[in-house]
Length: 204
Image (cartoon, rainbow, N blue to C red; front, side, top):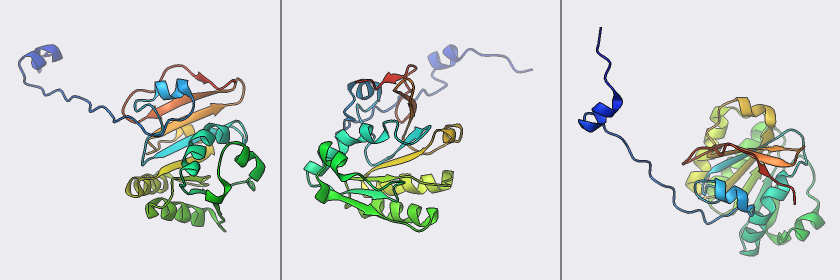
């Protein structure tokens, strides 16, 4: 039977290499929620990456969470693309949130597959500040394509999906669950660090 050796002894003898995590560079895209920025390793949305918003029902605050970032991007002239949104965007609400409507574009799709394809193309183009999608029937492979497309196009990618998808693995750099009662969010996964153990209140 092999002898049991303490890991501390191996480290002391330099027989095991202990890697040091490379800290993420500070994000240039704060979320607009101070408590969330403080909890995320980069201090904001992961750049050139896919972020998932997992919701129990539509309208629990998913758009309000994104509006500060989208407003900042649109006011800088960046294009904001919505791919196959489940509802027609209510322009006055977007305008009141600070989004320049001239930068807002909506892409329609005839099927979930076409919506995924359109999202990937928008992300890869590198011509968008942010791309929002509501993917249906998206498996791990499809989400990985979106993650890679966001990286190659250096674009913020947001995918809103049902909360039930939290049980399935995802290549997204950030996964946030939004609860309706109480109004709060939970970081389920964040690249570069551990998810905070406590929910973050969204009550204004």
